[in-house]
Image (cartoon, rainbow, N blue to C red; front, side, top):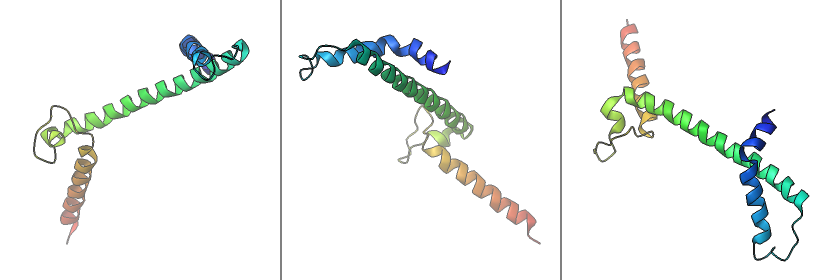
Length: 114
């Protein structure tokens, strides 16, 4: 089922890419082998599907980091030079979370001291 999906989604473009291999200077003198071209296209389609899934995952997790950053407000949009950016700086989010956790740990320790 999954294999059929990526074939249906990407196979036409993958076939074009595979066929173009016989147009390259170093291969244009070779007669195209249709069976080989189809086998190559299937593998290209699988890689295209993998790349697309990677892109979707990256966007998903970046969205989560951005949502967390938004909770910190301007601090998550402030560059090291002090300038304020329009969007959350994803690289700032782990630093801000670590600071929040550290502050929470210190606060808890202070509350629990006899």
